[in-house]
Length: 422
Ligand SMILES: Cc1ncc(COP(=O)(O)O)c(C=O)c1O
Image 1 (tube, rainbow, N blue to C red):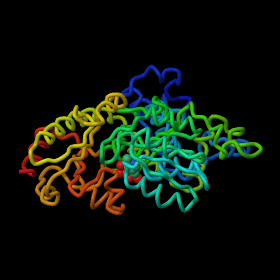
Image 2 (image 1 turned 60 degrees about the vertical axis):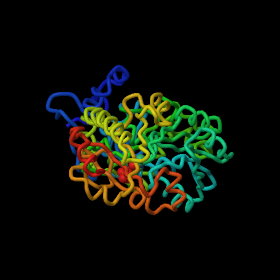
Image 3 (image 1 turned 90 degrees about the vertical axis):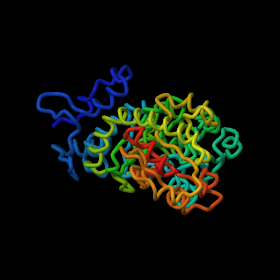
Image 4 (image 1 turned 30 degrees about the vertical axis):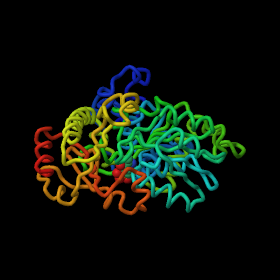
């Protein structure tokens, strides 16, 4: 078996290859007897042939020693995600939640501050308002506009945090503007790009983001069968105004250079906190990525058709989908969602309970990016534990339904919605 990065696609070739090519070829070794795919190395530990080799591995983490620190299957997936997001390095973790936590913790420590947009996934709001404050890190949640973010910046703000497309309001972040605001203050800009489909719909690093996270549970895994998360860092981030990286003799920047940010994420997220992606899960995600573009391109087309249908339906209130020309987010969507407008929308119905119970094909389940179309009632489920004001700030009302569109036929989904609305 050969899982050595030097046998992967030649790095010089990567910028010239299309998404679909990268998705099926990165992370795979080349040579006689090597499997055509990413092999599962379900091992806890890996051997050394000398004390020197052991000491070097513990210094560099370049290979594999122990799967809490690095595993070859996970590493192959990390190379694939790095290529698809156009990044410098990736760390995979046990869930999207673990990825967000690790990313936030890599930029901040006690006394630091985060500015985040309020239309975030409920779990991210929970981290920012409930968990990080326990560590002395405070956060201000503001409406998803550059002006609101700018007004909330403090001298101790180390991170600006947004989602490519807000959940479930389907509002689009002005990535370039937020990156500029963060960088002007010496802060990092982190983006949860879960709805951006691992770089297929949007590559936030191209628009100035420094850190990109994913719930791999969603479109990457793609079949609702695996939990996972990732943090990818770009190659242009500036840590020179963040004392976590500049303090000490030698400082983290001195010892790790441009790799300091990714190193800290791996150190915190996997090595110390143990939020490890199991090798079998990495294999499932890597396999999911191979068909992500086929699935998500189709899902975006179907989602647009359904959003237009719902928008014209008398029994439906507000429809939030950035692909609709009437959406207040359409202009930003055209700018940043270069691969499609996404597979998720939210819409309001008068009687959510009745509507949900009448669906015959579409299923009610709290996930996104499945091959099947799934709906939830965010007010009582995904956002149910948030205070009412925070739920409304996130664009959730008692009438809201969130729908993640799968790969089924448009006509079948439309007919199911029509009969449930009738
Ligand atoms: C946008 C977004 N980010 C992060 C997460 C957390 O991911 P996970 O469930 O894999 O922990 C979710 C989960 O729904 C999500 O929708």
